[in-house]
Length: 257
Image 1 (cartoon, rainbow, N blue to C red):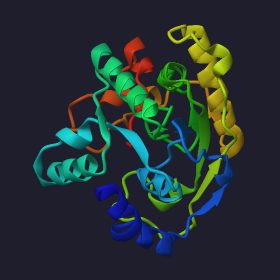
Image 2 (cartoon, rainbow, N blue to C red; image 1 turned 30 degrees about the vertical axis):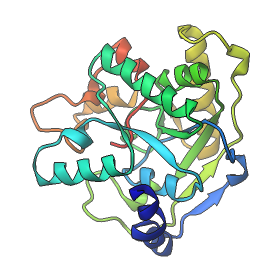
Image 3 (tube, one colour; image 1 turned 45 degrees about the horizontal axis):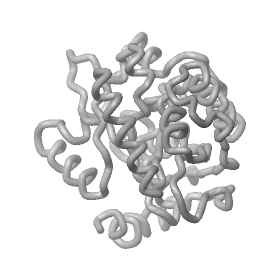
Image 4 (cartoon, helix red, strand yellow; image 1 turned 60 degrees about the vertical axis):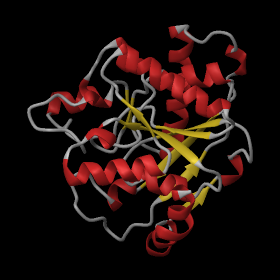
């Protein structure tokens, strides 16, 4: 209920009126049935503009910090993300990774749209980084297509660290043609297949976005540069984005951050 209220009354009309986001390739979105919307991730506002331009409901796997951050900011965050039906994901261990994958497959098997950022975190510099293979595992287990989505100029609207968004440029959302991976049916768990699928998805995102591709994980770059703290993280603690284990590679992604 809160999702549709925010989309059509409380937030959506204001976002459309102020920023006037443009859309290309909307005809590539399925009218029904489960599908993964796999997007590049430039800004916190990606998770607002992407659902805004999709007629159907989009559910994201949200990082657990949105639900566990202490204080007033944390309570408001928990209320907001819980109210719109987002699914918390703790990316620190293998058990949490399995839980995230299970949650994602359940959403897809219900015939819903699942929003995923395969990079696992926001790009530190606007380039496109190596994707984590959880997106491939969920596509195979649920037997659904993957729709590549390129967010355009959202990092210029709301750059990391800014308190208030800029009013220009107009952000854009570009949907690519559905990727059908039915040729790999029954191969979920094969790490070579899942890596090949993920790389194909990232190639399509590179083509759609026009961004330079970097064959390393964005979280690793953030860890090396000290730019890994995000919403909900506390100084002195290593953010979940910095975890570089096999389990972390399996985790589908965060919602934003």
